[in-house]
Image 1 (cartoon, rainbow, N blue to C red):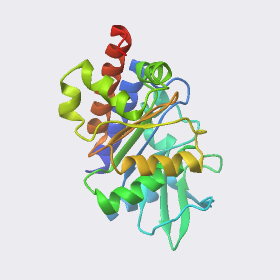
Image 2 (image 1 turned 90 degrees about the horizontal axis):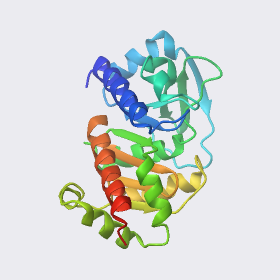
Image 3 (image 1 turned 180 degrees about the vertical axis):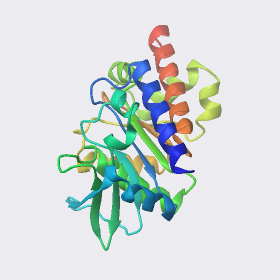
Length: 239
C-alpha cells in the first residue's frame, strides 16, 4: 500500500471510531507494519519524523527488521483524523535496539506499544498478510465484558454466536478473551500475543477490543460486527 493510501485510511478509521464514541479522550491506538523500504525512507525523511531516539524495551524479546507506524501516547483520534503524521511515530528494531522517529522530544508511542511490537513481530513471521492492528473502546463490548465477566471464554463465544449467524461465519477462530491486566503492561502484551495465535480479535475485559487485519478496514469490520453481537446479547438478556 502506498504511503498516501495508508495515511488516508488512518484518517477515515479514526473518524469512524470518534463518530461511534469508541475513542473518548485519548482512548485507542493503532499501528501499521511497514514492509516497503521506500515507505520507511519516505517517513523518516519527512519533517514530522526528524527526531530519532532509543526506547526502553522492558525486557521484551526483540527481533530486527520490524518497522511500524504507531499512534502516539496521548494522541486523540479526533486529532489523528485531521493530521495523522503529527500524532504518529515510526518504531523499529535495529541491532536489538528499539528505535523511534518522532516529531519532537515530548512525543512517545502509545502506552500499548509493547502489545503492538510483539504482535507485529509475530505476524511478520507467521501471518504476514496481516499488517494492521487497532485497539479501541466499543461501548457495548465493554458493557458485555462486565455483564458476562464470570463466564468462560467458551460460554462467551457461545453467547456471541447465538446473536446472529454472521458471527460463526466471520469468526471461525472465535473471539479471544483476556482477564483485566493494567493498560500498557508487559503482562498484557504477552497475554495478548498468546491469545492472538488462535484469534484475530480479542476482548480485553472491561477495557476494549484489539483486532488485526489485512488493512485497517478489515480490522474495524471485525470490531463493528463483534460490538453489534455484544449489543444484541445485552438487549436480549442472553444467558
